[in-house]
Amino acid sequence: METYKKIILPEKEMPTKWYNIQADMPNPCLPSLHPVTNKPIGPEDLAPIFPMELIKQEVSKERWIEIPEEVFDIYKIWRPSPVYRAYHLEKLLDTPAKIYYKYEGVSPAGSHKPNTAVPQAYYNKMEGVKRLTTETGAGQWGSALSYACQIFGIDLEVYMVKISYEQKPYRKLMMNTWGAKVFSSPTNKTASGKKVLAEDPDSPGSLGIAISEAVERAATDENTKYSLGSVLNHVLMHQTIIGEEAIKQMDMAGDFPDIVIGCFGGGSNFAGISFPFLRLNLTEGKKVRCIAAEPSSCPKLTKGEFRYDFGDTVGLTPLLPMYTLGHTFIPAPIHAGGLRYHGAGVIVSQLLKDKLIEAQSFHQLECFDAGVKFAKAEGIIPAPESNHAIACAVKEALIAKEEGVSKTILFNLSGHGYFDMSSYEAYFSGKLVEHHLTEEELHADLKKLNTPAAV
Ligand SMILES: *Cc1c(COP(=O)(O)O)cnc(C)c1O
Image (cartoon, rainbow, N blue to C red; front, side, top):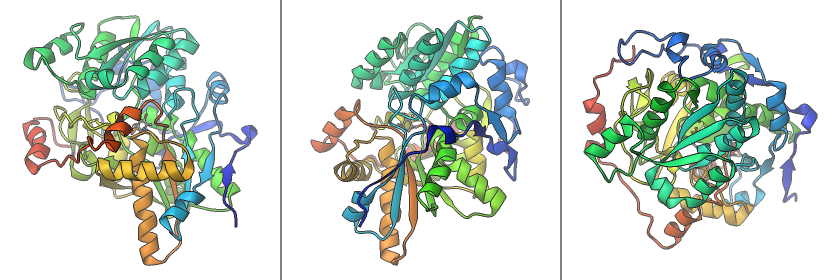
C-alpha cells in the first residue's frame, strides 16, 4: 500500500492568470457605499489609499487577469506549492475518506499571504508609491508585506494589534528584518488610536482599530498608500493561484475533491483554495462542497448578519455589504490572531447568502486537538488559524466513516505554526480555555449598528 504522496506541479504548468469569480457569480455583489454620503463609491473615492490598478481589479468582471511577469518570477521562489495526500492522518482517523492538503507554509513568510503581498507591492511600485501602511493581527500579513515591500524598495509601516505584538515578538522581528517599522496598536500616532486609548487605555487592540490607524496614515499623506491582506476582492483574486494549481495537482493524483475546506478570517485563503473549484461548479456543473471554517469566538459567517458595515472600528472605510458581527465587535483574545476580524469579504458574503458555499464554526480546543493530531501524523506543525481547516477536515472524514462512504477531502494548510509555539504551549499546559459567546455578547455590537440594510 502507498504511504506517501507529494504532488509537485512542474513550474512550466504554473497558472499564469488569476481567476476573478465576479465574472461567474449568479448575483453580483452589492456596491460598497461612501461612509459619509451612503452613495455607491467610485474609483476616485479609493484613489487616495489604493493604486489605480488594484481599484480596477476590485470591480473587474473579467474572468482571467494576467499575472505580471515580475510577480510571476517572484512567485516561482516558492510556487507551485505542494499538495500532499495525508495518508497517516487518514490511518490515525481510521477513515475511508481520502484527505489531501495544499501546503502554503512554503513561502518565505510561512503562509499564503505573500501571494497577494507581492502583486500589491508591485502595483504600488509601478504607480510611484513611496510608502505603504498596513495592519497586522497575528503578524503573518505584516511579515508577508514586509517581505514584498523589501523586494520592491517601498517603505512600510505596520500597525500590529497590541495583544499579538506582546505575544509574538518573533513575528515583529521578522518584519524588522525585512526592513519594516512596527507599532503596537492602538498608538498615539493617529487620531483613531488616540480616540480608542482615551476610551480604554488598556485596549488589547483589534484588527479593526489597527486598520483605522493604517488607513488614516495613508489618507493623510500623499506619498503613502494602504494595503490590506484579506477581505477585498482583489486580495481574494490574487490567492486563486492556490486553487488553480490544486485543480491541476488533483488531476495529477487522478482524483477530484468532493469537499474543499479553508479556514476563515476575512476570506482570502478560503477563496484561494475554493473559488477555482466553484468556477467548475458554476461553469461545468460540478458539485464540490466548499466549506469555510471559522472560530466560534468570532463567528461572523455562522452567527453574523448580512448588512452594510464598516471594515474598521472607527468607521473610515467604505460601507461593505457583508456578514458582520458589528464593526465594534472585539473578539476574545483567542490565539488564532489571524481569524479575529469582525466581518467577511464581500464576495464570500454574497456567495454564502446565495448558498453556493457553506460555513462551520469550531472551538479552539477542538482546533488545537486536530492540529496536534495532524502534526503527529504528517509532521508539519500548522498555524493556529489553519487548525480550523484541519478540524473541519477531521470532522468531515469522521462523518464519512460513520456513513461508510469514501469522500475525497482537500483542505488548504494556509501556514505553518513555527512562530506560534506559545499558543501550543498554552494548549499543552491547559491554559487555553474554551470561549463560549453568549447571545447577548453576539448581538451587542450588531444592535448598535445604524448602517444601511444590504438590499
Ligand atoms: C491571515 C491568515 C489566515 C486568515 O486570513 P484569510 O484572509 O481568511 O485567509 C489564515 N491562515 C493563516 C496562516 C494566515 O496567516
